[in-house]
Length: 298
Image (tube, rainbow, N blue to C red; front, side, top):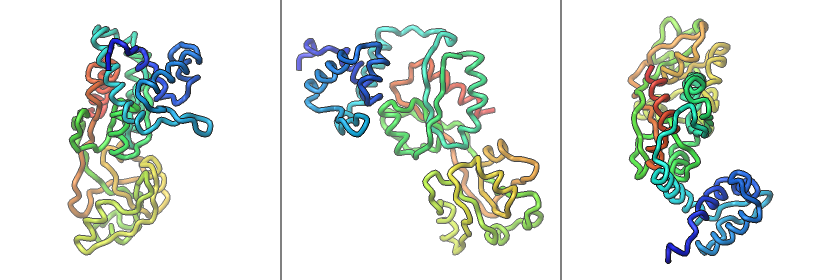
């Protein structure tokens, strides 16, 4: 293919089309007319020899080839932008959206202080916290550019995705202060009462249950909830127990709750920050990442 015959502006339009999956919204985002964007889509279809966007019920859906193109197109556009406009703007002049994929526990730790710090230094940066759908979804969204930052347990090595450890956290067992086992908590007491399990996928069993099974033990799961934020109120009014990350418990505890060490050895876990290599030089994303490091390190 002769690159001189390719209009690179088509990649800018295609990037918007693939993200919006809607011609009118892409046109509005790019400040172009709808006919101009429709014409560009037809040219992109010819260029890539693929429909790219198939019309469905009420919206368009990217084809498999289009999904594979999203990450590389974002990479190319980021490199061109850095090449043509390498200057670093003032934080107060930045206007952009930074999307963070995180479980509800780190979201609860980050949301308020992050909003406060951005309001003081970079009010034009908006943060969108996206629901945690697991490491596979995070990897996919970082590659396609649907998420700029991930805050979660994300230990595996992946090409083009950078990670760093923000903190190491341990577990505590939480219960109401007047719980029958509060004064003499031990393994038998821990296993005698039903537990709350937090799972965004509704799963009743966790790696802890596998460890217990290997020791010939088991626990009763009395309730599964999708969010750590629901647990304190549940514990305060029931005799359920919950094993929670220590930092999350300390942030959400109330006077009616206590936390004690687990009655057997339970490995902690690291919390990671993850981002795509294409965003290394983005000042807004880098600044938000730096604030996350500070907040979770305090």
